[in-house]
Length: 429
Image 1 (cartoon, rainbow, N blue to C red):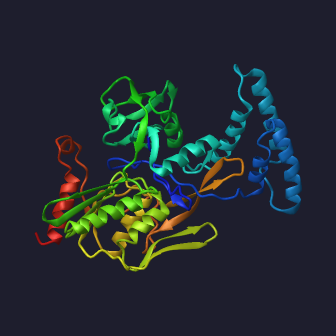
Image 2 (cartoon, rainbow, N blue to C red):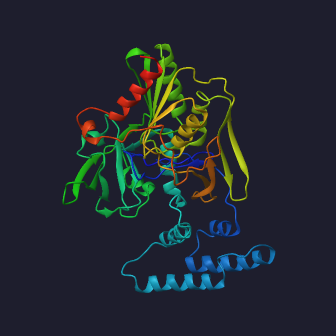
Image 3 (tube, helix red, strand yellow):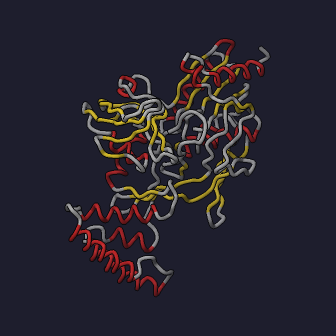
């Protein structure tokens, strides 16, 4: 099971949550190794093994010392004391025993939840390891992409990979994951859902889904198997029209795209369609590397943090595409896919066909802590080469073509057919 993409990388990232329109979406990937910074965080990490009460009393002592030298901390004496009371009350009255580590993780997750930012998350060591494994493009799961629907509170299956257990099962694109092994998935982050679906090869997982047109939840048993995630698909159409679909920007995607692009050239490509529909994003360095195979000289994207610090990602233009280009995008095209779409549109080197993209114009960074856990924090905003902030807005297509689900069920992708028509016009066909 893949989740939706972030610039989860060993560098900055920006991920996409499900759109408000369009067809599909998805994932979370690579991680930036770094040190934990900030007085409160460093104190938390250093005291992970002690009890919650003693843990926060020690934080209070350290905080008092730190306050004498620097800024005020949120963990003042009142907070420390209240946390102790909460732990004692839970221990005395809660109907079952709770592991100390579970309570501690809840504290950390709660601090991140207080930011009211769905992209800022605390990962336990186990969660981080699980997520990092996905960066290799090989994992043990069922072979489906998911995205979180903020309106319903559930994650939704946005795409099913061909030849996988998910395709062999009764799961369908558009299903909402209601429960896994009887545990409700309401309000759970995509990463958490993925961690519950993944497991040992050859074992089965029971996924309960909500499906449009069905009154009751449906239980579906799916086998876990080794999944090699293809992120690029290539096809050559008639009259020299090449088609390359990028489903997400993973670590392996650069090489997969380069191979497909070179094959298209070898096959006599006269024009190119790049399909970014349902692509939720991925690694920043990956999308920039792919952009450098297409764009003219200049900016690919730039970011700005809250201090006004600007970081630019550039292209030298040595590989600028020399054939007509059409880019397919929709409401599930987010983050990294919007970076590529926005650059193509700003430079005018291609025509955007489809519907308005998701509109995720913020960047996350994963900061690894010394105990093996990590924080993913939103750290900056990104802008297209022309300085457009697309967050919450998206990128409008040059030619708007809503997706026709009925035609698709009958084997006709109306958006793709329009892209072919536009490209044929560019080629004078």
